Length: 140
Image (cartoon, rainbow, N blue to C red):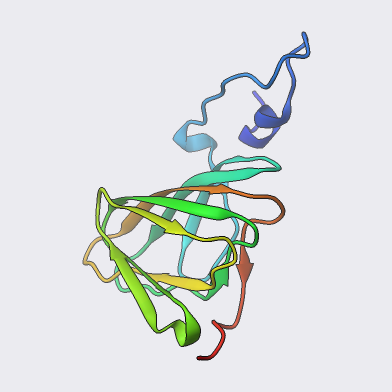
């Protein structure tokens, strides 16, 4: 069987759209890197990215944005604080069962203020690379 990315871009012999595919846990690949976070890629196409993200307790990620991709996060465990805005002065915190939306181009960083690992399902829709690491947000 070919990897997840190859499966999502193939056409069937009849020329129909891509088939429905499944990616098992052992078939996930490392996703784009940001310090402090571990991303596991399930699917990546020209228009979207999806996978799992893990942030250890007390860890703070590097500043980054997702280019033209809008991002939706569903928190499975732990807690996820997202700092954003001028000087990174604004923040929201998500708990298990919460959805979180990060607009395209929003410079942000994640941290895990809980005592357990934060695990989240992430889906991004957009084009081009899905992760850009940066020095920080714009000043106020």
